[in-house]
Image 1 (cartoon, helix red, strand yellow):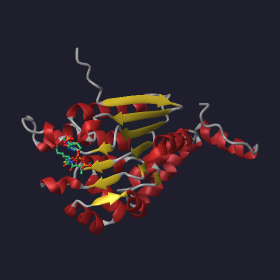
Image 2 (image 1 turned 180 degrees about the vertical axis):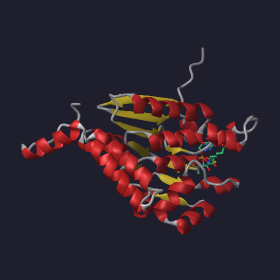
Image 3 (image 1 turned 45 degrees about the horizontal axis):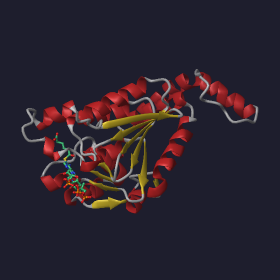
Image 4 (image 1 turned 180 degrees about the horizontal axis):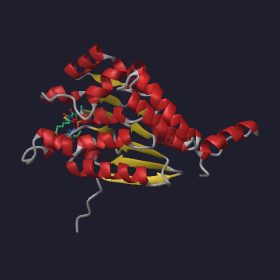
Length: 261
Ligand code: T3D
């Protein structure tokens, strides 16, 4: 009997759920099985109280090379149907998740893989990682959120150039452009990501969930609307035990314990 490797690996340690795209021979190019399992895994992790932070990464030398181009011919869906069935629910699951999602970009992120690299709340890159808005090489347009994420990070003109020329953005430039928060050596990347994720997992989960909600709403709202939402969500945060714990810990001159709830 031939055993097939799962397209997605799932592991949980110290409140950190790591989802690893696992098609290393194709630089984790995404087929439907991978995309649908990722969306389901993201939703499950969101609902699981033992999970405080989610890490999305790839196995082998790639992060994700975008749509598996070997999987397209013979597909009985239009592009629009396919995006609405696979990539768009995944991007919505990441951005709508109540927990921090870290895009841990271990290698090349191309096409929709670049969108996944940008979609996380935190983007950690290995030194050898690179991002390519590669869609125009095959005369497609950037999708899976790239047209939304990238201009907000680098401005319209730089985004257009990166998309039109499909230039490779290496980690030093990505850091300079604000496409990632930190770059770690390849050799210690996994450990650095886990340490970062555990530090995030020790932060107040309810407050981070509300912060994510407010920030996501603010990306498309007015200052007036943002002020209103802040006032509303601050009440929710202030009524939560975490707030009491933070204030008590400050007064008692000790570190707060936000993991006890
Ligand atoms: O369908 C829809 O609903 C629309 C949605 C579209 C979303 C998209 O993502 S469109 C963009 C699709 N992705 C690409 O066009 C990227 C294609 N890949 C590349 O251009 C290169 O592989 C990279 C620049 C990403 C990396 O280059 P390199 O030299 O480091 O690696 P390589 O040798 O090209 O790739 C290694 C293997 O992975 C190779 O297989 P082989 O020859 O060793 O058997 C290659 O064919 C395979 N691979 C890489 N990317 C894909 C892929 N196989 C299928 N699909 C891929 N996207």
